[in-house]
Length: 355
Image (tube, rainbow, N blue to C red):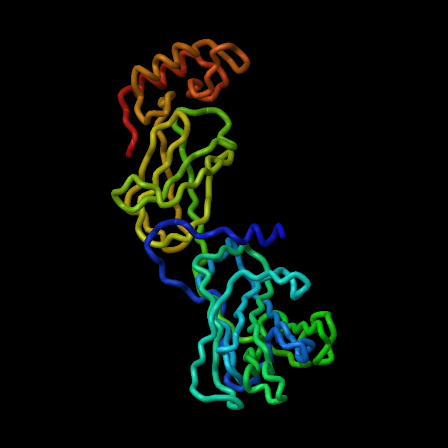
């Protein structure tokens, strides 16, 4: 599915670990009972398989999810588990199961069947990106209820998803395709006729916005769409942790999102301008970083030298469509290589950009 492909943007930054934040929290209220959420594998009980869904909302500019904890209780034997699953989808349905992770069941209290004891499902997603929007989360255990077919159910039993009040957004939905609970195949809002939510917590990191302006010195042309490469680096390093190619607007403004938090160097480089590096920039939330870039680096080696003079001479007098036209030699952006471009190069001759 296209929407799912857009979600599966793996986190591969190779940076130091950032402590997870609680992005969404619906803890158990300590009172409400649980509802079974299980894919029963034994034939006699498959009609009772139930998937529960509850909604949550991701704000701008999106989340990177590290962990999901689903709060529940156990009345059976989790050693019979054949899988513990998590789904995040744009609608409450099981026509196509959108499994995004497999997890583990953690039983928090001692005791055997028929005792009901706390047992949570934990899913490690390690940086799963969700763009802004409303989603429906589902988690369930796959297990036989009565593997020995003796009518007791104590060999497999059930896992229950704990409920909570009041609701955030819509009450939870249930889907019982087999009709064993009398609800049929379509999702039913407010499962078992209760106006409640399901208990779960989402941990991770919200992306923050880095924005500002890039002043392109000695340039009178249209800045709209000019690409600028901005790198985020560890202080004192020239290795990029993240690289963002941004397009300027008519005022030279840019923006991008990052999940990095801390102190970093920010480096900006455009085609015929020298690189500028801002040191020790604090990114703890939305951050403003403004750059001023020096013109004249026609060959892109981050220095203004005789090599740039050579390229300007080769393009002198040309316009778009002419033989020898080089847009990077049009330093002032007037769509022609003239003496004005020579003047810019002479003024900045010998300048070297930051590393």
